[in-house]
Length: 182
Ligand SMILES: [Cu+2]
Image (tube, rainbow, N blue to C red; front, side):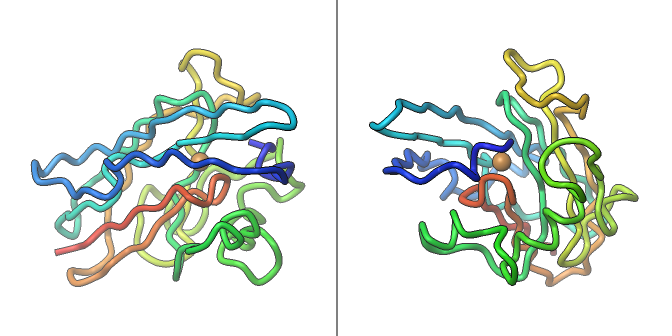
């Protein structure tokens, strides 16, 4: 979880094309996939992603995020998502969309204590900007999160029909998705 803060060298993203595709099947499960790889003085590569990225649901339906990676993530509704490499790696600085959400989840910085659910997500709902939940990796191979947090979370989408909820992981700010509520 803490590695984002130390990324300073060259960066390679191998984002899966799958994040660009919607869900035609009506699946209500979003997988969290990917790995990261670091070679000192050479590269850092991470392709953590939501699969699918965009999803259409009806208001009141539930969506499950299932983490298959060995790192923790967040599902965080934000007013806008970072659009450049600089925005991605600067997310968390004061004034960015990541800052208030990181402050909620990690009131003393990365590591315990943590707040698992922020805003309506504390009650199992996703509705408005600021709603956010931590997804852990307990049970996945090599889980590097020192705190037991479930790797699967189900949230009820209670935003009204017509809403477009932009969401992201504030730990890995290139992980971005959208929920279209009908
Ligand atoms: Cu993440």
